[in-house]
Length: 296
Ligand code: GUN
Image (cartoon, rainbow, N blue to C red):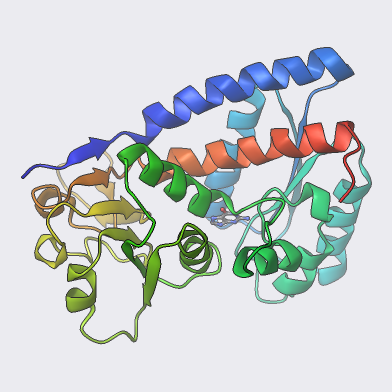
C-alpha cells in the first residue's frame, strides 16, 4: 500500500488566496486593512524566522503587521506594555505572542493579558478553557492544531469514533489538538516521553498526530495499515549531501510510513504552511468581528 501524500503547501496556498480576497473586501468596506500585532522577545533564530514568515504571509495577503521586537533581557513590564499597546491599538485585530518566552517572563500572565477578541493564537486561558469544555466553543483555536484538523479533513479521515493517538503533550500543539480531536468525537490517547509501549498504542490508531519533536521517531511498522498520519515535527538533521549541510525531517519516518499509511503529510510542506494560514484565517475573522462590533 502506498499512502496518499498530502501537500499542505498547496492547500495553504488555496486558502491564502481566499483570505487575500476576504482582506480586500474588508479594506473596501472599512477603508483600512486587517492588522496583526506580533510580540517577539529575544533572538531565538527559529522564533525569529517563524515571526518573519507569519508577518510576510499576512502582508502578502493584504494585511498590515506591526512588530514589537524586544531584547532577550526584556522585563515582564516591557512585554506587558507591548501587549497592552496592541490591545489598545484600533488598527490591530489580532495579537500573536511568539512562544516560548525567555525564562524571566511569566508566560501565563502575558497570555492572559491579550484581549480576548484579538486572541488569534487561541492561547488565552478562556479560549483554551472553552476548547476543553463540552458545549462551549472558543472564539479562536490555536493555529497548528487547527491546521492539523484541516489536513485530516482534506485526507477524508472520519473522526467520529476513530482511535486517535497524539504523540507529544505541548501546550502549543499536543494538548490543544487532543482537545480538538475529542470535540470531533474521536477516542483520544495522548502519548508522551514517559509513555510505555508507545508502538503498541500507535498500532491501534486510525489517526496519528506526531508532535514530539524527535526526528523520524514514529516507525513505519508502528502504524496500522491505512492510518491517517499528520506529522507536525520540523527537525533539523545533518545531511552532508544537502547544499547547506542539513535538512528538515518530521517526527515520522516518512519513507517507511508512506508504505503503510492511508494518507500522510510531508515535511517540509505539510503542517508548517497550514499553521501560518490558520493564523491569517483567525486574524481576518477577528477583524470582521471587531469592525462589525460583534460583542462577546
Ligand atoms: N511557537 C511555536 N509555534 C507557535 C505558535 O503557533 N504560536 C505561538 N504564539 N508561538 C509558537
